Amino acid sequence: MFIKMLKKIGLAASAAMFLVAFASAVSAQNNTVFSDPNVEYSFDVPDARWKMTVKPTVTNPNVEFVFVDRLDGHLEVRKLSVAQNVLISDVIKEEEQKLQFLPGYVAGREENFGGKLNGAILNYEYVRAGRPMAGRFYFLRSGSSVYVLRFTGFRDKLRSIRTQTDIIARTFGVSS
Image (cartoon, rainbow, N blue to C red; front, side, top):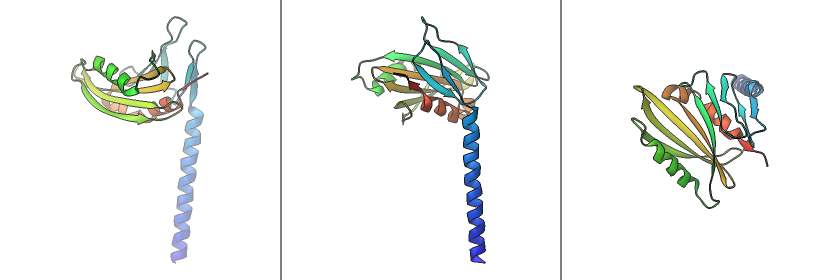
């Protein structure tokens, strides 16, 4: 009886692992890659509901995406040039000084982050038109450049797509 129960548990565990692997494979197939000849970076776009709203050009290398609606999720990618010896925490402090004047601004915690590029995340909350909003900025370092992936949106919506924002940041890479 005990052996039969172990076999059932083993079968259930195998089935669960198969489902996780299958779900990962299916989600990986849905990813598209953003790249453009006007910028040196690329990243995975994990969901077709992310739409590019600002295309990079030779004179303006910034790109912007919106998840369904601008208030559901908005991504801006910016490149900052910094000296090699400048700490990422100093770059975050400088960015945070600009944010502190948002209505209802509340600083969140900083997190270390790793993907193709390493860096840190700044989380914060604020209020826009009486609605709770949030920001999640990924600061990713590549030599003397820091790329800032600025995600903003309704607090609950941004929280619900956090896995997607992490995928975008983890796959963000710079071509040599």
